[in-house]
Length: 340
Image 1 (tube, rainbow, N blue to C red):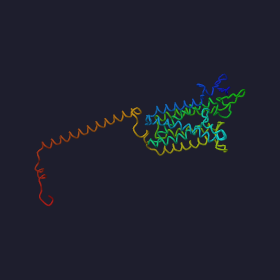
Image 2: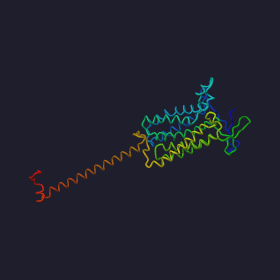
Image 3: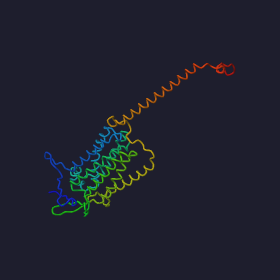
Image 4: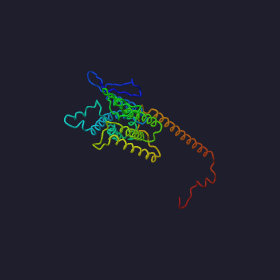
């Protein structure tokens, strides 16, 4: 029997006891993996939908899917392993590194390695780095919002005991403890962040990289406080310093500093899309505008040339009709002398 989950705010009769896995042809499929995958799929669909807004092509997006997914998984797992060595290093333990279906992924590890991968990809394809980071940040916050519900299924990533009205109850046999639902805090925090960043990126984005910096600041601020409530944090050695809390506050401060600097320094915004032509299917409206502008310019040029030709013809006809004056004849007559 699993651990029963309750929320007193919903009433005493409301309880959840979801299984951590289901079976297909006798093989266990863990809900944690399904939910994380769902988060990635929704993030990918959103990024694909917004690609034209950032001047990215279909090929760019497909390439990003291919390189970011494995990078995120490897980075998230390595981060967890590095800061939780007792679970993986020792006789017969190292194979546990590859057991991902039951959890053991750290968000910041996935973000760090994915950022490095995206940096390499953008430089190779000669795409402005800020453009790729912006669109990836929007997708990432969706994935985090959904993925945290995998922690709910696993009964993990919860906080310290509390009596706040929105507390979550965990019942082990006949014992119930009430804790902060930190998975829910982070999911809601990311949902709010996504809504804000989505509309901001549509109307108010001023320069490449702005959305990514805002995401880092927003997520770092929320994660710093939420991480302080959790009971399963990864610590840096025996220092008592929570690894993710340190990364959160440092990244938040750095992002805010860059946002303030860019607000002061950047008087005019540079290109807000990726360099190079996009696929017609990616930016048909932009192509139509460019074609209309080109046609208008061609018409203006032809009109100017026609006007100039007409004026020259009229002047020539006028000169032929007017007789030359004696003074004109004297001015046009050849002169003998030293300067001939």
